[in-house]
Every structure is written in structure tokens, then in C-alpha cells.
Length: 243
Length: 354
Ligand code: FES
Image (cartoon, rainbow over all chains, first blue to last red; front, side, top):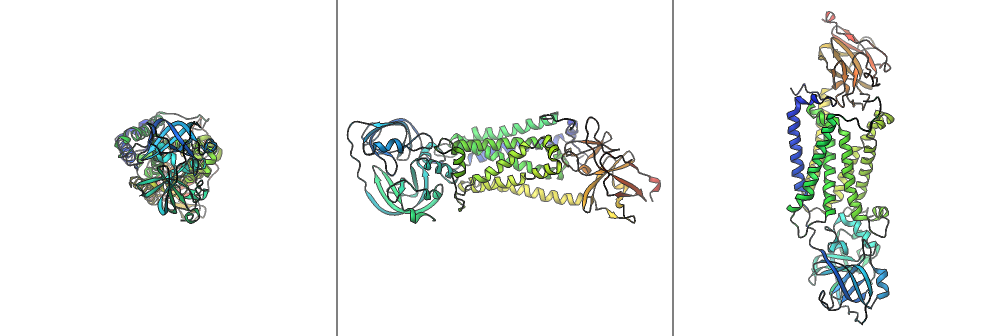
């Protein structure tokens, strides 16, 4: 039987002698498709938490270095001295809108994103707000050697899940180039948190050279400071590159 | 078959083939997108774009693995021949699935930034000097370009335009695309995966494709007729006994330094033609004689047993070879006659057999 089968496409009847075989093959293929879809579709990495928190109004003092943040006034939404990272729509930062408002009391609206204790606002509107607000004093927590991953703050806080790891590396770089604040995710906590805003050793924007380190775990030396209630990791670029 | 080009020459087999394939893709993608997320153990669900990327990406890998298994499977067991019949549609659908994966990745990772998305795609990651975080996208782009080129040239128009040997050589680059996809996954998703299932799936796919090709090659070597031997007359080669060929079947005769020849037996006569089908150079000697026509095992192109010409309205012609029978042995003149030149089939003359 098996020896005699000869299928000719334009003659569907030629498939009749092997119809049972073809039926069994179809069942195997359907079973394998279903099994693999369920297995591969469920065996995903846990992207961790992080999600949108709805529309927010943030009022407080604007700090623009290393990246724009608002350190909040007390309000029903936020406690006093809480730091909210600022990002624009898409893969853009808000440096241009924030720069003229540096050190001033501001009011920002937009969509909130939160992961753990870190908040970010995807800014819709940003304007000066009457009244004064003192720029918070930074506290130097000393020099640290930290292992961790440089992520773009927007994705890793929950806009994308997963928003970290090697497959997300190019996206993270595009975000960082666009001005989205980088968040360093340390492998072990510093003062109770693994998530830190990141800047260069002088407290400026992250240099391009560090972008080989996005998406992968690396070790960096640098100083850690407070900015409101977030930590800022000022990585020593010269020491970090090439690690 | 070849009288004129139609967008697709549909028939029942092709429709059933395509429906089954679309059904399997829908089953896989549907379960991946809508049922599997309920089984994930995660703090918060993955975003829909990432799930779609994974669904269409893994689907394209599995489809391509299956495509590459069809050739050797059909060699090992003829009951897989129906899979081979419409393999080009399979390839085009696979390309569409891969493009869907790429479109979601492009939209999610490279759009909505101040940088032009195509510039972002090429400049987003340039860490070529490291394994972890290597720009795995380049392998995916390379595979996608090959798949798109193959899908675009899959039509019979291109087959005719490029000629079957060139077309076939071009379509062998599918193996390159598969290698590129394996690298794309190895340097991308596998670098991030904490669960070994994806790695095991890729490894199993790769191993299956390789093993089936090795088995099929071994079977092919064993199945190929013995090489034709020189005879006393330098113009003729000894093929073997007439009785080695069954009625309405053929044998493949490898010729040193030249194309193999297919010899068929039908109604007490023998006819020798090139082993290369004029369509896609399929192995004619593995075909049958049906309705008095030599019929190719791949897509069923037919050529008259008597003169190697496709019946009207088709126009293909095969090169024929001269045969002689002496003492029950087939003798073959290995010089192909110009296609279309008539050679009378050789009568199997039992009286002259020993
Ligand atoms: S190769 Fe397609 S019919 Fe022969």
C-alpha cells in the first residue's frame, strides 16, 4: 500500500489511498500547534510590575539635572518631597519644555506610570505655577560599585512589559537618545530600592558611551545621591566603559 | 501548467492545502494570544505588542522548520508528497507571518521617537562587540529580506524568467534564512529567556531539520541506481537489466560528470528522458507513467512517454536519450538529444533476452 501511493496535485483522488495517513498527520500537526502555542505562550519571563496609574496632576519644584523631575508639594495624590520623573509622549524627553522652568514651581498634567516606589508622568501640559518651592537639598550617599541594567525609565516603569533585557536594548537606546530619563535597575537594593535615576559622574545626561550597557547587566562605579525621595546614580563613565 | 501565467492556478488540492495551513496558523496564534496569557505566571501581564511579537515570531520559526522538513520527509516516505505539492504557498504564508512579527517589533520599538524609525532600526543598537546585547535585529532583517525575495519570486513567471536551475539555486537561500532566524533568536530572545522551553524548541527544530536531511541523503544514495558502466562500444553505457524497471515506473541513472537520466517502462517499451523536470527540476525518474505520460512526482507536470513533450496546450519539452537493449541489458547513449527531437521508444524484446 505504502509503496504504491503516488500523489498528483491536480488529481485529489490520488490522495485517497493515503487519506488515513494524512488525517493522522493533520491531527499531529494540530496537536503540536496547540501544545506549542500554550507552552511557549505561557513560558514567558515575568516582566515584574509597573503600569499606568491614570491621569495625574503634579505640582512641585522643577529640577532638570540629570533629567527633568518634579519634587512634589504635598497633595492628595503625592506626599511632600516625592520625586516624579518626567517624560514626553512616545520616545521623547521633556528637556526643552522643562529647561526654562528649572528651579521654579510648576504644574504638570499627563498620564502616570508607576513601578514600586518610582513615579513617572508622561507630560501633556507643563507650566509655571504661582508660588515658591525650595529646591530640595541633595544628600550624598557615598561611592558605590553597583551591578545592574541601564533601562529607559518609561518602558521599565511599565509602559512596556517587558521593558528591559537584551531584546529591549535597541528600544531603550532610542528612548534614551530621545531624552527619556534612564533608570538603573540594580541587582541588589541600595537603601531599600533597586530603581535609581541615572546620570553621568558630574550629574549631567547619560553619555552615549554607556549605551552599550543598556539591556544587559554590568558593573559600574559611581556616587549615589538623593533627589527628593529617589536615588540618583552618577556613574563614572570612564571606569564603566569596556566592562 | 505553463500555457499562460495566472496569479495562482487554483485546484482542489491547493485550496485544501491552504485552508489547512491557515487553520493551523490561526489555531497557533489564537491560542498564543488569547489562551496562553491566562496560564502565564506573572506579576503583571505582558503588553499586547510583546505577546504578538512572540506569537508571530515563534510561529514563523516553526513554519520554516516544517517547510525545511517537507523535502526530506517526502524522500523518506511518499505519503508526505502532498505536503510538497503546494510548498510555495506555505513559503509565502510563512513570509507573511514573519512580516507580521517584524511589523509589531518595528512599531513597538522604533516608532514614535524624534529619530526616523528606519534610522532608529539601524542605529538603535550598535553593540556589535558583545554577545550579550548583540544587535540581533540584523539577523532578523537579513532573514526577512531573503523570505520576502523568495516569496516575491515564488511565482511560475519568475521560475520561467530565471530558468529552473537559477530559481532553484536562489530558493536554496531559504537555508540561509533559517540559519539567520536561529541566530536572531539565539542572540535575542534566548539571551533574555529565563525558561528553557524556547531554547529547547529551537534546538529540537534545528536537530529535526538536520537529521531528516542526513537520513534523506542516505536514502537517496541507496535508492539511486548504480552508475551506468562503459560498454564495448564507447558511445554506449550499460545501465542494467530491463527487468529492473517495473511497468509504468522509472529509474534514475546517474551519469558520471553529467545530469542523471530517467528511464521509464510503459506498455512493453522503454523511454529515456532527462531526470530534471522542466518545471522546477524535480526528479522525474521518481515519477510514474500516468495516462501514457511521464508524471513528475513534485507538482504533476506531464510529458508524453513517446516524445517527452507536454500534452497540448502545454509546451515543455524534455531532452530524450537513445536506448538499446542487448541480451536483456539496457544500453544508453548518454548524449542528450535536443529537446523535441523524436526518438522512438525502445521495445522490450524478450526474444533477445538470455
Ligand atoms: S518540478 Fe514541478 S512538476 Fe516537476
